[in-house]
Amino acid sequence: MEQATKKYNNKKWEGHKGSEMKKYNKKQSKFMKLQHQVDESIREKWAEEQYLLKESLIEEDKFDWYLPVQDDEYNQDKEKEGLKPLEMIGAVDISYSKTDSQKACAALVVLAYPSFDVLYEDYEIDTTEYPYIPGFLAFKEIPSLTILFNRLKENSPEFWPQVLLVDGNGILHNRGFGCASHIGVVMDIPSIGVGKTVFAVDGITQRGVREMSEAKLLKGGDLEYLVGRSGKNWGAALRSTDDSKNPIIISVGHRVCLETAIAVVRACITRYRIPEPIRQADKRGRVWVQKTYDSKGKTMQKSSLRKEMEAKRVFDTKPSKPKSSKSKEESKKMDHDKKVIEKTWSPKKKSKKKKKGPIIDDDGFTQV
Image (cartoon, rainbow, N blue to C red; front, side, top):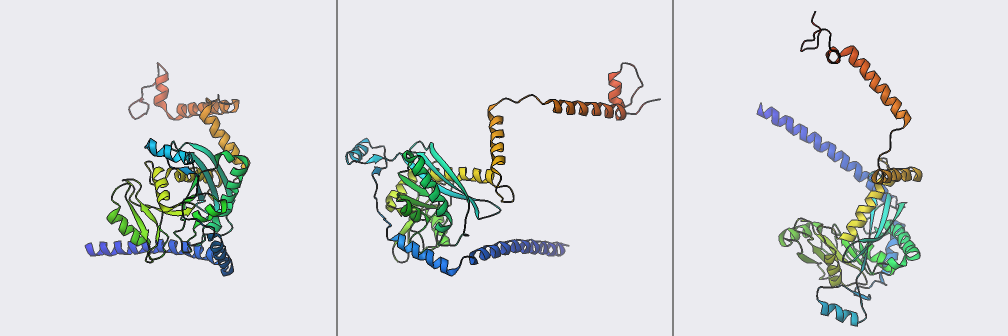
């Protein structure tokens, strides 16, 4: 009996495993199909553009602000040098529809430092022209982000951030020019890459970083540098909090050195794993994705979206209105139908309303 049960369970597990593998293979085939749509000549052109832009990359501090600390003397010395305190930190993130990875919402937020109040936010709904291809993420996301920054510069230049946190990698990249470096150079803004996963380069692997973090990153605030086989320091892995076992990956974007990048990211850690500016961009962008795309990934009509948002606003701010005359008539009809049904099928309830009448037993039947 035990052998038969074990054999049955094994078959059941193999069937489950097979179905999961089919789903995985289906996703992989769709992913590979999208990747193959991008011609090799386009990839070569992108690589050339990355190398060209990389010539303008600056991996050292080049800005007119300083990160305030609790030491007043230090802050005063920095101000005497003509530097301004860091007061506005920007962040960008792109959220995608769950059913269509090419339908996206780019989010740009600017937060006050150190309060982390959101001073500015803007979003761009778009359908990306290209799928994700490792090493070329910027060419999928930069078009939407550029629109947001140009709009900020034109309409609200007073909220231009002093430094930008990017949900992605900077120089931790196979060509040393990831998305954080790309947007930093294009928009000429100090930028920092904050990745959730490791980009494999120069002997640095996800498995190696995972094993290192389990052995050395034992509590919140612990940090280890990511040094490749060549001896180059590509970035750092930081355990944000005691509760977050998976580290975040910090790398230089543009116009900041690694130590400054680490200091800024540390200053933006609250009680969550992700730095607060990026967390806000991600959180708010996801809301817009849910509001903009329906369950099939299709773009909703603007009028429908507006009505939905107005309805929510009325619900949140105004007291409930009395029911319309139509709803009153419907409720009266329902009450009438209910009474008819009770009168016909519930002799027990009927007997309660009358002082005199037939005796009803516990089962609801009339005693003769």
